[in-house]
Length: 252
Image (cartoon, rainbow, N blue to C red; front, side, top):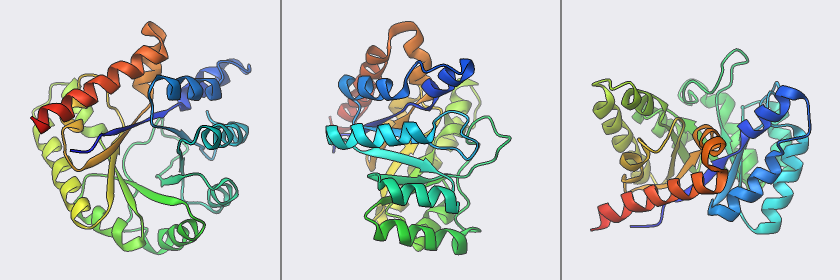
């Protein structure tokens, strides 16, 4: 079984910075620390309202990721502005996500089925520019097929519903995990690389990491929160260890 990569989302370092309008804590410094602690790449979401990550952050993150030879996963809405920024920076990957101004965080996956006509040309232009395009979708077989149809090379499955069900001890958790497994298997069958993310913590990571076709997890809010108590490096190292343990148990 292949090694599962860990992408660290550093958006909420910028949230803390912006709360005071100061220059610290610096999300770029957090990205450098995350890479030093074992992260395989950095994820950052440039929202239309710039509530956390800024354009200057993307400039700096793109530069340090290129310098270190690590991927930058640029999360963005499907808008002309975000497409232009992605084409200007040409990150390793662009993950297309839904976005509503009033939401606290991303509440679900991109509806690629309904949005096919708007999404497909954006995907085509990004791919032509050499950017690896991912669609952030719910664990739904129709959305998996639609992502393939618009030309995405990767799908990232939204794990938030499963993780929330586990934390709240709801009986739906097992069914939601089964959905994640089925969507992962179908995406893999279609030739898509499969990633997962949203809401993952130490309690929920191992069942997700044990899904054999998954290639990458993207984790942010929990790691930044845990860093307050134990430091960013140790928080990432513990997550990395749990991921590796889950993979090792499947290979045994």
